[in-house]
Length: 418
Ligand code: SF4
Image (cartoon, rainbow, N blue to C red; front, side):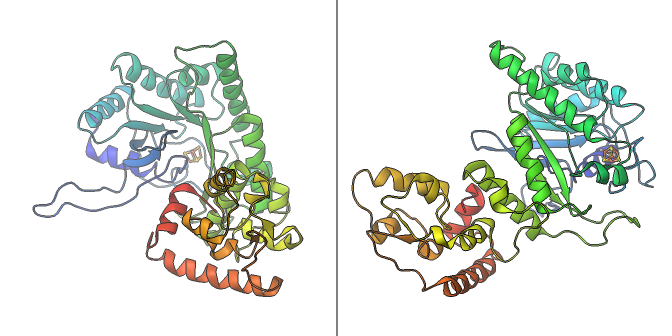
């Protein structure tokens, strides 16, 4: 049975991986209270149908033969080490599942002994869970770079999702900060997984389909000098060429001392802007070239959609009753849901500002970029519009401190509407 000390080490060591989200809160139960939260162990993730589920997030081992400069588990780090067995993980998952603590597993590992040995044990764990324990819950498995493809595909047939973390966006940064990993050792397995998914789809394989919930990856932002433009180009290529479900961005946190790493975090604003840009690429029809030049970072001042609109004022205002969907999606303040609602509603009547308000379209920003039945209620000229947007952004940032204080904030946080 896995003892508490090892469980604590192995769940705590898994917390910096955000390719499934981490809950990270610590709260002990009070007298007459119900339940408690611990630092590591259970995190939350979202299923394709939007449900939030709890996952046990754990490493099989934090003993690593690799020495990635930024990682608290690297071989040269002086930290408590622990390892568990496939059987112990299976028992833990089943016990937690039966007690209703979790609905799934996020299983990862440092590379102990050899990449193949690590991958073999991870594979053994997931097969045991499915075949011996008949566990049908969600499993997200981390792939081990340099492990054999056959092993990886074998594991992929028993899990819902797999991820290889790219971590650093260029080969030169990998060489410097994660010298045992190569771009090829991360990208090639991702390509192979995608090919296996296509094979299953084309051959209508139903049983033990390769990763039915797709693959994800994570990049650390700010540990290396790559610009947001480079990071977004890489993300766009991953979405396009391998149909990734999600690229996660993790702002670099200086948890280890190193002369070649920055001493400051990249900050949550940079991470947030990257997620906003990522959303525009995936759901709003933007091309990365429109959002950010290759060697530039995203604007801190405005979100990427506002920034694009201010640079392209010659395309605005657009008439809400005639603008094509592609253009409605580019109006700051009108989210994807709002744009589709407008397209649907204008089949029946010509829309005015009151109609938009009734449809819960937030007009604070949008009014500077649209006309309704030819009427314009925005500010006069580029400088005034910029000024209004800055003020509005400031007040939005203030509101954000009180987390979801308005309905719009809550909807935006949950749906990613921009
Ligand atoms: S492979 Fe690198 S990132 Fe992964 S656990 Fe080992 S040192 Fe850390």
